[in-house]
Structures are given as structure tokens and as C-alpha cells.
Length: 397
Image 1 (cartoon, helix red, strand yellow):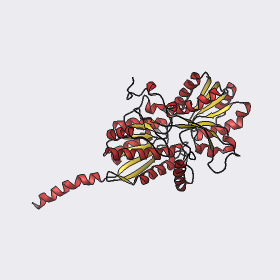
Image 2 (spheres, one colour; image 1 turned 180 degrees about the vertical axis):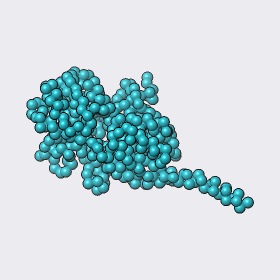
Image 3 (cartoon, one colour; image 1 turned 30 degrees about the horizontal axis):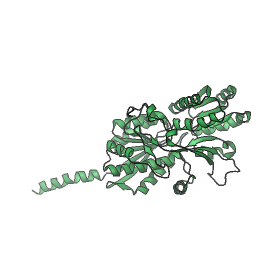
Image 4 (cartoon, helix red, strand yellow; image 1 turned 180 degrees about the horizontal axis):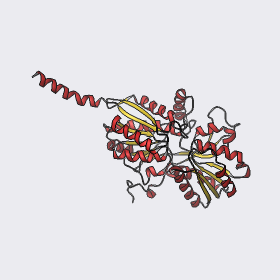
């Protein structure tokens, strides 16, 4: 009888032990390469801030944050994700800087009935042809960048364009989206060239842009590639000859690295600026205390997406990916990052963005005081219309 009672007690304890396992969230991004400055370790800090502000636990389970560097390699990124899903029981992966890695991990997560929330990559494929019911895209994409920036510049007289892009999914997608916008508004893309990711010498690419005589030279790259492109474009005197340099994938850490003397006058679209309002300033002050820098759109987006995921888990009463995904689409996003954000059928979190111009050194009054917000770009303008969506989840008509 004693053995039977002991066996029953052990059996009863097993599910309790299992339910006490921590809820694990992974932040998978570039922590050592060209995109590490605007994502990297500081995005891990942002995720941990969200967990702490949420309360540190959900459904009676402690919340843990794991992190890893995918090194911008699809095979490494998918291997880490597979290990996390299969052995560490990670329920959601955030960050995912680099579009190629994000697309691969999003597909794997769907197979494993897990959730991904991409805040670093910009490819519209994540919510287009490659969309999944458990994959979400939070911050920015190539459509928002091209529509928000190019529409205004074409209307101001920049009719001819040359595109210099990074030779991978993000660069090609951004170039394609930009071409559509320029054509739609009566302009023309007169040429394009693609460079390797992490290139150090952009001379041959910039010479092609210069010889094209295009009124606008668009940089369809990101991270260190954008910084080096702008520096070398300045050395070549592109803007002095009348060509306007347009940074389609620029983030605030790029401007910080360039300095206002070099970056001044650049026009871009951003979904987040730390000095936009009281809520953004409050979050940014907390972030700066931990990182010694202001947050950019990626770090802010990681915090926002992790917080929304945890709210959805609580509301769903389970960590099962399907139920949580439904709640993520059902709940509105209202925080320092997005006002009245909506998670759509295709997984895109639709929210307002901002057309900004980089200040001159004389206009800047303090460190990180870099942007002038020219106007608000409404969510429906900077989001791919659902009527044009290639996502099979979208019900049309």
C-alpha cells in the first residue's frame, strides 16, 4: 500500500513539475557583425526589460530569456533555433536581424508549432509569400521604407533614381519595392547595382551611381554597409554634384556612428524615435541607464513585441502557439512604440511611422538629438494593402 501511495504521489508530482518549467523566449540576432549595433546585445537587454516590466512570470511560470548570435548565416541560425525548440523548449524567438535567417527560422518555427516575432529584418516576404500563422513582423519593412521616403522625394522633384543595394533578400526586396513606388509616382530607376554584405570598398559601385547622373541615389542596405556607403559617397562628392543621397535602411545608431557633419540632411522613414513623446522618452531613459545609449527602432520593437507576446499568453491562458497567435492578432498594440497598432491576418503589425530628416550640427542640442520629424505617415500608407497581399492567410474580397 505504501508503495502504491508513493507511486501515486510521484505521478501527481510529474505534471506539477512540468508546468513549473520556465517559459523560455529566445533573442536570435547578429551580435558580432554588420547589424550588431542596431540589434545585437542591446536587443537582448530590451527583451529582459520587457520580461521584468511584465512581472517576470506568466501562468505560474518564470520567464527566461536566451540569446545567441546567428552570425548572419542561415545554417547557424536554423541550427540554433532547432536546438532551442527541441531541447530548450523555447516557445518564441524574437529579434531575427537578417532577412534570410528570419525567413528560414520563421518556416522552421511554423513546422514546430512555435512563434517568431521579427523586429530586425525588413523583408516584406515575411508577411507575403512566406507568411505563416505563427510568424509576426513588428517594426519596419521595405514597403514602408520605399513608400514613406520615395513618394515624398519624387514629388519634390527627384525623378531619376539609381539603387545601390546589398546582395541578399533584404537588398533585392527593397530595390524591387522602391522601383514600384518610383514608377507609380512618375519617376524612373535608371540603374541598380548590388554589393556583397560587409563590403569595405564601395568605390566601383559609387562610380556607377555617379556616372548615372541620377538625381537620387538610394542605398538599399543596412548597418555597417550603410555607414560605409555614406562615408565613401561623401568622399566622392556625390551630394556636392547635386545628387541626393537617400538612406532607405538607416537607423539612429548609423547616424551616431557617422556624425551629424556627414549625415546631416539625410531623409528617411522610421517607425520610432526616442524623443517623439513622453512615453518614448521615459522608456529610452530606462534603456539608456542599462546600455549607455538611446534605443533605436529595433531595440524598441523587441521590447514592444515581447511585451505583446506575454500579454497574449496571459490572455490565452496557454503557451500553445496557435492560441497565442490568435490572441496576438486580437489584442491592440498601445505602448511607447506604437499607438493603436493592429496585428493583421498576415502577421504584420500595422502602425504609424514618421518621415524624418537628420539635423545639422547646429540644430542638435544634446547627444542623440538627431532627428526632425517632418510628418506622421499613417499606418495604411506604409503597410502593404491586404488587397495586394501575397500571404495565403489573407482572405480577400
